[in-house]
Image (cartoon, rainbow, N blue to C red; front, side, top):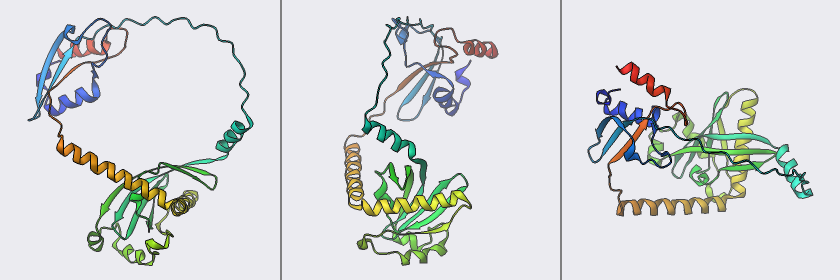
Length: 269
């Protein structure tokens, strides 16, 4: 297998996805003791990555100690534990995920992913305030929450950054932030049961936000402070580029010589 014939791009893919990076070392054997069969250096300008094709080591299987016999004891849950188990069993579990386009001082275009396609809603909520919300429970439903958010200014909103610029006028009907009441308008909804679930999910999300507005905004502000502090620290302490050596080999088994390696050797002759 001639690594020198590989382009830097292909070499990177090979080292990252196809071959097993030599992270774990056989007992008593250091990386220097490995036999290098071929090598290629990828120059990235400010650093270099050296890919070494090495002979696959044979790892000795670790002896499995015999487990001592354990006397099985039936566990009897308490009344509180039983109540909690029954509560979680009674819930319906849903995924509340999608992508949000936040327009500063105006609102959010939220695209909720469903099995039947996207449900699109215009919301008065600044979805950046939900960046620390990972789950919520409401009306017998437990939601796992995850979405991506992108941000645009009010000027970009006026330039028509909405998916459909005709939706822009509908943001004018939303209550002001100071009212403490959030609102959304569905502009695209899947048909059937998935459409109903999408509407319920957004109703539950907005009701939850109204009830926990101060806590969610405070969590967002703390998150922003931490992010800005991290960015400033990184500017003051930029990472120093370092050369990297990757020892790798095709792997078939953790305890036997790799058949994949033998096949590569045969095809490269």
